[in-house]
Length: 218
Ligand code: 5RP
Image 1 (tube, rainbow, N blue to C red):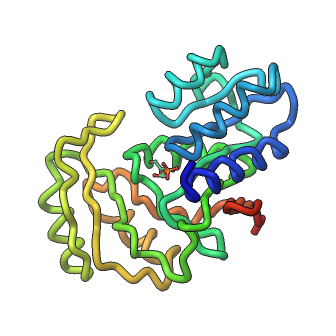
Image 2 (cartoon, rainbow, N blue to C red):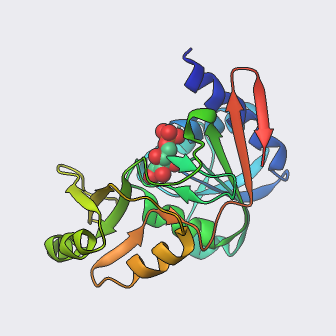
């Protein structure tokens, strides 16, 4: 297994300790979360059910026999576990590499605690090296792109990608995100933006960073 995958698997396994037996938890999307789902399945009956942030995670959870609930029926959740494309030690995140950012932001918002699991290659001092994903209403794509250029970004349309919500993604290159909460607030105001892949106004509560030797918790 690659060093990155070992780090992902270790972080995922460590997050199991945060799960309260018999609870309904939120589950994110991506290869790190896949390790978490597999670890969850190995601990029989640890969770009662899960609220999933994507069709892909729903399929994986169900393939392990874990019940998936609609968020509208689950009420508020105690815990949400998800990965990230970039993370700072302040627990600000860039997410959306897997195009699931909108549902991820909703489930994170509905959860009391957000535990983010990453391998150590995701840790950065300043967000922006990974292009910032922004989900947009299809008819607003060009307008939003012009607004992003006016703010110093270089948006690239993620072609052949339709989100689970029927929308499109712009990946914004060239941003140096020195003040994540204020950039998130600003980009949220652009008409046609559905979700900005910055998780700063609601950062992770715990960042579990895995590497070949073990895990560090921030
Ligand atoms: C999906 C996400 C993922 O959390 C992010 O892309 C990290 O994925 P991986 O664990 O595969 O590196 O935000 O929208």
